[in-house]
Image 1 (cartoon, chains in turn brown, blue):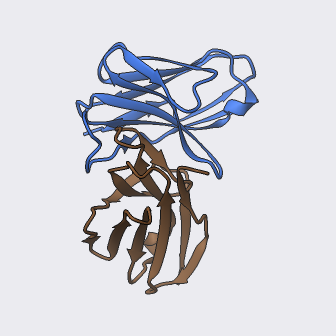
Image 2 (cartoon, rainbow over the protein chains, first blue to last red):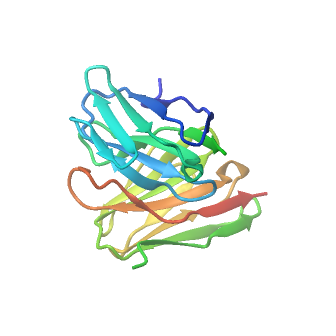
Image 3 (cartoon, rainbow over the protein chains, first blue to last red):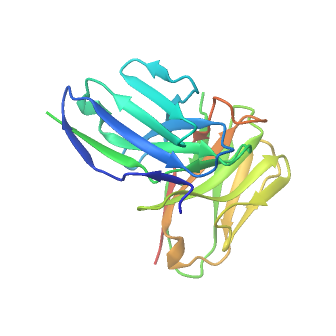
Length: 110
Length: 115
């Protein structure tokens, strides 16, 4: 079993749609959680951290469910510029090392 | 404000050749990492450094060596390149201690093809 698992997609949605991605992680000791965005042939960039109480940044909302060991990312009012691959990232146990999921690809169409 | 800089951006090697990938960061980060990214497999950690002169193996270290003589530079070496090392290589850096809320900062990557 992979340490971090994501649905690879692609999710193909129209502009303005709401889309949600889920991610599961296997290590119950993990403490740090992130969503990264990666554009085609570019480096991953931090989109947002995920806090225990859930957090929001504009159109993006992240949730953490420790009991079920999953993380979600909700994107409201999708824009064409949101088209990218979204990486779920979790630290390995209590260490500083991050484990990256394989990513979920989002395509937003006009 | 350069962040993390990787050189070269592209390279084609013949099987058996050697090369060194360079990574430099100007954020005074203590920790640096080398990853490779292959289709469908996500980012996999090759080697990492937790301070000047200190390195350790990641998930996929075979065929690679690293050097960290200065805090801001982290070198990844391929002694005898193989086609299986065709990949995109990313360098990243982070602050010390628990990862907390800051994650990693990545360089723009090196696309390596071994023929």
